[in-house]
Every structure is written in C-alpha cells, then in structure tokens.
Image 1 (tube, helix red, strand yellow):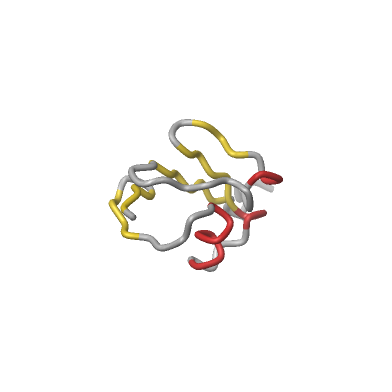
Image 2 (spheres, rainbow, N blue to C red):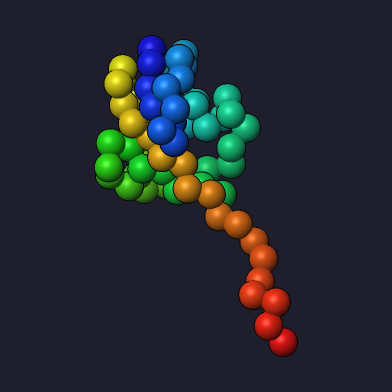
Length: 69
C-alpha cells in the first residue's frame, strides 16, 4: 500500500506502525511519530494500524550540545 513518509510516497507492506519502524531499523524510543497530523504515543506504536494514503512524519531526536562553555 502507498503512504507518505516525511513527504515522500512509499510503497510499504507493513500494516502496523511498529512493524514499519522495525523494517526501517528505527528504534521507537529515538523517534516521535505523527500520523495524519496526530502524535502517536509510544505505548501505542505497536498497535497503531496503517492504512492506504496515511501520512507519517518521523521526528528524530539528535544528540549534541550548544558548544558553549
């Protein structure tokens, strides 16, 4: 089925958000996910069903600092 991930159309086979993250080797604790403009709670990732035409945004946490001493 086709969905949009970060603005790009992709053909995926996975039917749950958890399976999609696993197939992309994305650790759920390192990303926030927005599905059709709604933030998904981490505890619901594995049970969240995906449907044709869904729009997903993956927001990754980046480490680092400001460089200020």
